[in-house]
Length: 410
Image 1 (spheres, rainbow, N blue to C red):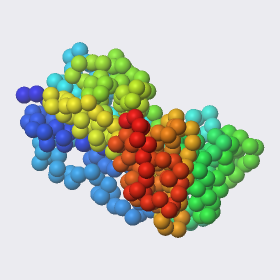
Image 2 (cartoon, one colour):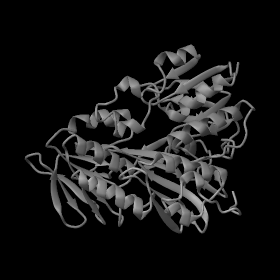
Image 3 (cartoon, rainbow, N blue to C red):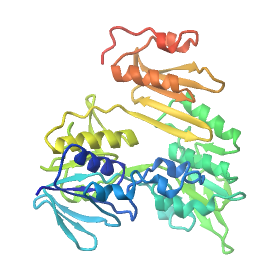
C-alpha cells in the first residue's frame, strides 16, 4: 500500500490531504502537524478571533471527525526533526520513525521575532502567527492598556485595528518612509494611515524600535530610533515571516526563497513535493512565493493531482484581502514593476480603488470597500486584459464598460 506523508498541518497541508482523497487516493495518508490542534484558519487570528467574534472551534478548517472519516491519520503536536530523501523516512522529535513512498512539505512560514539584543526575550512581547500566539496575547487586549506594534505591514495594521477597537492605546512604528511600503502604493497606504488615525492610532514612519527595557518596578518602556521613549504594557512584532525551510534544507532539498519547486510542485528530490507559504515556484519568467490562503489551497490541490499522476502546471492567480475596522481591502494581482497608479472613486462614500499599471498593462488592483472594482480587476488580470487607464479614472465610465487595450499581451 502506498503511503503519502504530508508534513505541515496548516491550510496547504489540509487542502492537499483532502484533495488526495477526493481524487481517489486510497492508500495510507498521514498529515503531521507541529501544533497540538487540528488545521485551522490563520487570517482571523489577528481579526475576529482576537475580537472575540469567532470561537476557537470555528477556526478549524474541518470538523475533527473529518480526518478519521476520510482515513487521514492526523498526527498533531509532532514536530518532524529530520527527513531522509534517500530512504524516504522521517523522524518525529519524540524519536518515532515514519517511512513513506511520497512526501509533501507544507511547512508554511515562521514569524520573524525581535532579537534578544533589543529586548525580544522580555515578557509581554508577542508575534501574531499561530493560535498559541493569539491565545498568549489575548489578555493584553483590554481598555487602558498601551501597545507598541513594530511593523507597518498588514499583520501589524490588523493587530492595531483590533487593539484600538478594544480600547488599547496604540503606537505603531515603521522603519520605512511609509507603511505598506513593500506591498502597496502610496495612495493605498495614505488611505489606510488616515483610517487608523481616525481611530486614534499613532503611526510613526521612518521610525523603528531601538531597545525595550523594564524598570525595577516592572514598567516596560521602548526607546525608538528617533530618540523618543514611551511607556507601554506589551509589544506586538509584525515584521514579517520567513518560509519554513530548515527541514528541507537539512535534507539537501534545494531552497530558493522557499522550498524550490517546479510548475507541478516537485522539489529537487524525487517523490518529494511542496506547496503553500513555504514553496517558491516559477511565475511569468520569475520565481515567487505567495503568502495567501488562496495560493495555499490552489497550489496544494494542484500538487496533490501531480502526486497521483493527474496534474497539470499550476497557474497562480494571486489575490489577497485585509480586514481592518469596518474596511475590507481586497487585492487582485501582483503590483511588482508598476510605474503608475490610477485611482477610481467607488460608488459608495469612502470606497475607492487603485489600479497599478506598467505602461498600458494592468498588473494589480487594490479595492477599498469596493467589491465591484475588485472583481472587475481580478477578471481582467486573469484574462490578460488591460483597460484604458483614463477610462478607469473616470467614474462616469461604468466598470462593465471599460474599454480595453486590444493588443495587451497575456
